[in-house]
Length: 289
Image 1 (cartoon, rainbow, N blue to C red):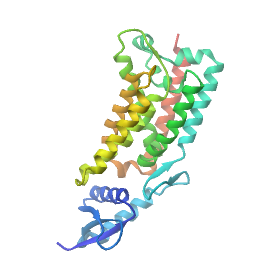
Image 2: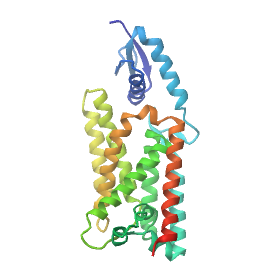
Image 3: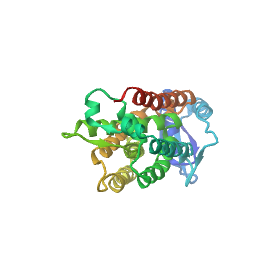
């Protein structure tokens, strides 16, 4: 079979292009270029024009906006919208420090959840015990969420990490044999770690080859979890739940990555995120005893 090469700036970009081509029924392989430094996507010469057009449309649909920028190396994106998330954490801290009802109504209280106050699984993410707790989550969350949104899309990455954080709270509630209180965005931060670590498996499964990238990604994710998620005095169960949920969500999201990066998809996910912030807090402030 006669083949043609489409040069890419990085292995990650080549992988993304290959996924976009596969979604359109165009077979492709990714390998290092023999003629020039870098990577190429190899397709049948008969499908070359269709492949180039597919990649052009992929870039048109997924054109980054001003707050998504490449950092460190080509193809590695950081989404600066994460700084708005950190600012929201600070705003909620200021609010619940000046309003005692917010803390009592929004904290993860396992007994209250047993009695139907499900919204605490979400509202607890926005509460913090003190400034040190807030600063840790705001700083690490800013970095990890920025890379997560850069990988999956602004709305998709934000909503995925938020779901992972809530899932961590669910696990903490289910595993509590005694009444328990909890709060903080650490489960969401651990969700980002899982979402970032799992992309190495998804890329490797699509294009099997040397396992160095696979083991490096998983080892890095595991190291970050141990570094940030098992500190004394923290809710290790919630952290593990967030990390594990991030891994599971990442498997699903990486499979549908070309579709999930579309602007409309991210807009819908961003709106769902806003609803899942406002609705639980409305429930907390109007119904919690």
